[in-house]
Length: 327
Image 1 (cartoon, rainbow, N blue to C red):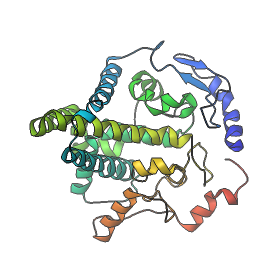
Image 2 (image 1 turned 45 degrees about the vertical axis):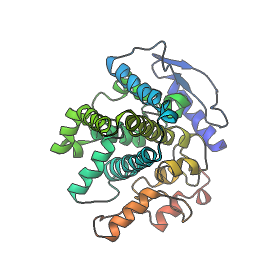
Image 3 (image 1 turned 90 degrees about the vertical axis):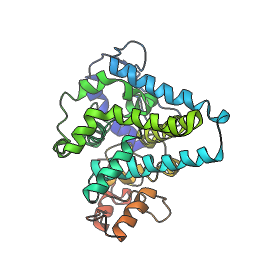
């Protein structure tokens, strides 16, 4: 932890040069129960400009959470298990396998029909279209824990968790043009999804309501989206604040077992930042990684190829035991 503090102290001079618009310098404030220093805190609600896109996204997030309040009054075992199934399909196959390991990092290859199927499941996780999601994630790795990181906790826990989602001004301020997803922009399928994204969500929501009425709408749309969204957000926030560091990386990433359980392996985040190309995040046998189990199954039946994993030499180079410097 002391190495992390030293690293952030060195970064402090650079952060003080940032634009003060929408930020408040908080000196050495630390995030609760951690040694992560908040360099500048972004105003989440007041003292900032709200664009129409921010309002729409915030209302959508609020809507999911309000729907979840009706869960105890609409509970049946049938709808509960359908919500669990949809959580797995959109969270594990859609976000973990499709958006993240397949698109963002190209950790493996699958036939296009399977790629598009997984990604389309991710569309229904309500985390924006693939081009936007992958672009933000690639920027996160490129600029991690710097002023251009989309969701670093150095701007505060809540900003890293959810605040950045409905602060389009912050995103526009950092990224005038997104040129890191040309591989997706060149494909008709991803351009089509980007143009018609909301229609896919609204169409699915209408089908769910027509199928099972309000109880299905509450559990499959409200509860499932609330859980998938917050689980994903915890990777951005909690996994850069609380947990264990195993590898030497230039960031605050941590391995967090309980986040890994609810995100199908994404919580082994220090592993991921050390070897971002790896299709496997739970590198130890006891580190549960459902996303990896899916990829390994696809590989065993010949559907996944070029599956990337860190070599022993790569692990040795990144091991905290083999270096005394926080680089």
